[in-house]
Amino acid sequence: MDYDIKDLSLAEKGKLKIEWAEKHMPVLKYIKEKFEKEKPLKGVRISACLHVTSETANLMEALKLGGADVVLTASNPLSTQDDVAASLVKHYQIPVFAIKGEDNKKYYEHIHKALDHKPIITMDDGADLVSTAHSDRKEILTGIIGGTEETTTGVIRLRSMALRGVLYYPIISVNDAKTKYLFDNRYGTGQSTIDGILRATNILLAGLNFVVCGYGWCGKGVAMRAKGAGAQVIITEVNPVNALEAVMDGFRVMSMNQASEIGDIFVTVTGNKNVIRKEHFERMKDGAIIANSGHFNVEIDIPGLEELSISRRKIREFVEEYTLKNKKRIYLLAEGRLINLSAAEGHPAVVMDMSFSNQALSVVYLARNAEKLKKEVYPVPKEIDEEIARLKLKSMGIEIDSLTPEQKKYLEEWAEGT
Ligand code: ADE
Image (cartoon, rainbow, N blue to C red):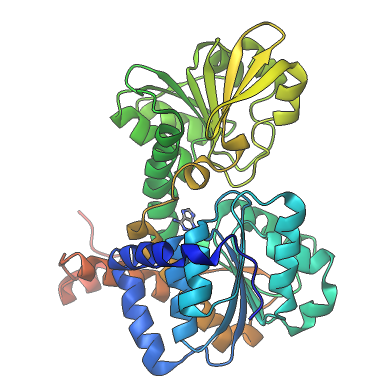
């Protein structure tokens, strides 16, 4: 079996982590049991480009139990858990191409390895696998029937490909399932971003001016958790509706220029580029901390920060000190890469349970229905989304009510009023 990981001897530690995650992924466990019996993915070749974590390992196991022939490559150079990668190879016989800290060249070599597998379904987190297949590996496109995409940034890229007519096969946007973004983006990013910042810095959040750039679902989660820790939260936005929402949720909203002058810590979660740039670094207080929790490391203009700096040194793992020409020091966390997956372990298994159950069931849906779909980005079918919510509630021992026949009828009619 071909693979490229850091060290196979880390496998035992990885296995324990995978088993720990499984205990918190009851919906995926149920799907695993069903897949093992029914083999809905028999013979389906899948190339997955996801963060290599203990939660992802459980998804890979589910696909394999369902009969799929799966390989895994990383969706970020700094998010791989090397022990998990080792266990996937050793205990689950799943080829993995991922090493934490790999450079960009190696990162793309690994993506090519995953494409060498000649997938009929791709599974992506950020769309690097799909975009590489569409640019450098066009010869494999004809064999692909469909793909799934995990994250907001990837969906934006894929929608742009579909709009320009260059997308070669249908994609299911797992990100847009309610049982994904309402939980993973909000509570997952919210908690794991704070976790990453704390593990990297060990700072006290209480009383700090904590600037969240972007008030989408991820920004909402980060702001909520920073507030809970006692920080004074400030939101910056470009979307007037989101900005208004932030105001009414009780946060201060201001421009990035204003926020730059008072922020103690800045977190970008916008999915866009150069959100914090030279004019902002120059205004910042001595000791300001900057981190990114958006998918790519372009939200902070790091080349701009380098140009403004006279020196740079590593202070702790995941903390780089930049001294600017104006003598102020700025601390960049995790090279501007996803702080939650670089310095911490990503979202907890409890939320990844729902995200990855959407992935598993969407792949089955594609295997059965891809030929009926156009080369567009599709939502996860509502039935899958709702089934996952039902299963999750059941796993929590929570019962809910159902409509009475009279209530159903009332909802279908329009004549009844005051
Ligand atoms: N994205 C965010 N958190 C994650 C995790 N724990 N595993 C895989 N992908 C993730």
